[in-house]
Length: 174
Image (cartoon, rainbow, N blue to C red; front, side, top):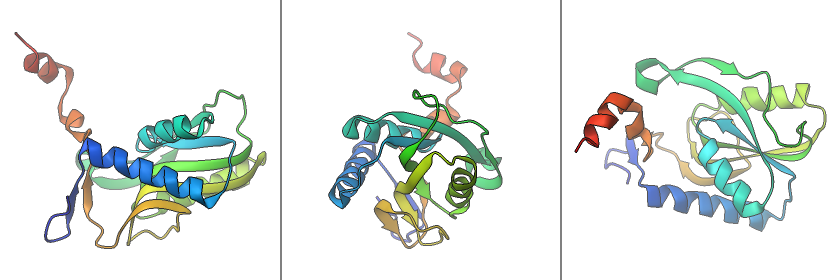
């Protein structure tokens, strides 16, 4: 649910999964076939996993990180892993790069550049996200929902960021 001022988007689990399914339909309807899904950890892992199951293709993982300050609310220096984890040994062929959102576009732009220069076995690369903000400088190939007002997205699983093991134990204490 988008707040009236357009500054916050609160997403339920049902909404989240519905948007991933909407994204899958858009990808399917494009007619493009791909060999592997490469998800960006952490945000792209959930949609990447679901899309991997829907399209029955292997899931590869590349770790990136830039939202660390202020409890994950401030974007800082972008770190990109040097290696990709894939069940096929080396990522190759047609690859669908998946993340949860295109916020500023910095992460997707940097990862796409790295893949194009450092992973020559990739013959074609396209991108997919659940949300693309109007502030993004990166143009995504497939997007479930455009967000021109650039709201802060409150994803349904974020409550775990404030639930360390001690609080979890207290929650379930009988």
